[in-house]
Length: 472
Length: 120
Image 1 (cartoon, each protein chain N blue to C red):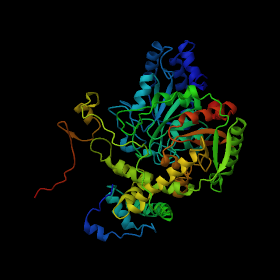
Image 2: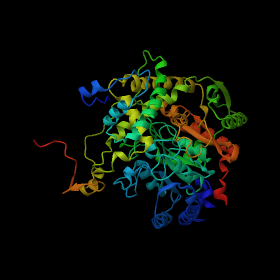
Image 3: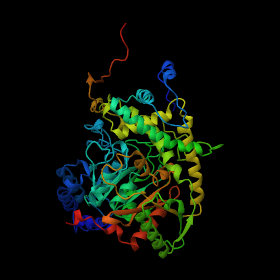
Image 4: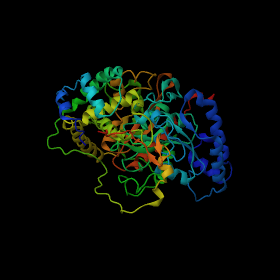
């Protein structure tokens, strides 16, 4: 199918009129009609007629100098405001909310000619690692529909994995783009904090929230990031630093590049199949000329405690704006998980506890930043697992708050430090369940991570495997 | 941001636990739910007492790490004092209709809110 091709190839064919965006959109909706009932990736599917009429318009003005994303179908996690398209954050509180403006990321993709085909499922407000804490029914993993698609952005990941679209836009506060990418056998970039505008994205935890792409490959993610990254006057935390031509530079050799392998990351807490798969990936990097060295990064066990103070505190503050007056419904509608996080955060910020929790966590955050900076000053990337466990069965994380927190073990730290991380498929475990790994770099090293990821994907074919539900 | 207790008398009734311990009581949860303006049922109070308690206990692990002399990080951009011109951007102004379009209760072009002051 056309949608299986890399974005670059599709763009070429659209320009040479070998195929049209209309045909591409038709193909996506056909597949959605067939597969979506077993997956439930969408909360709101854009009306096919509307998507087609936009595709027709794009087809008529497609040019060789325009954006390679022109005419390309994509989905957004339902955490982005999309003017005139319902936006819920997967919460009944926003069940009928129609945004009067668009997030910068959506606006930039729209201006590039990309075609939004739907708003996808998530743990409501980003609270979760399994897309079970949604008010719209969980998203099923295309690789095993009895299992979770990960979270919080299970919807966009399942949509890309099922090839409903070419790419998805996620939001990563503690792993919400990377964890579902790992569990769905797709690629995702969690960007440096401030690399992509947060304007119009529904806030979870403001000092940790990042906006980024998820797609089939590192090359596709790079093309999308080139379009959405860059300074935005509407977000004061967005960086004024120029955006690098990631896709041009990513074809370089990785010979001599240095990768750190923190031995503490591969201990008892990690599933043995994931450990084995990443050890094999390490050998692939070595075969490509990279230098991989064992290092020590002993702070790992403090990452989850810092994350579970900062994120709930900031979310309790952010969500206090939902008073049901200007928009939205009653606060009674928050899910159990959101209530847990709001209560934990309120407690951590309350008089008498602030110093012991929030302020303490902010200090440990500084320690983390220093440790990572030190390590990343002598290495191009850290090779890390994405999740400590394989895709969970439904209910597994819901019923166990500790296990639920542990799902963020390897991902939350990266948001605390603020650096980018590329999540890549690196194998399969029992039952043909996907395994992912992440490459964590220093601030604004997205380009270097794409190069490492692209080299890995040029040598391996894990990312080309499709779930059987799509093949049949 | 420090959320102040609702009132001094309530603060006196609120049994402050030792943060090092982190276990919570149902009355703590009642109090926090008021601070958070979060309606919770009796059943949820029970569940939250246990689950928030577990979380708080777990995150208290941080107390074992020395951070003497460490300055806290509140943001990682390295940017300071980001200003913009104090100008109106007409492209970002909602019409009254747009501003009210998602409100559940409106009246004569205004948002309707619950009464907060009582008549004498």
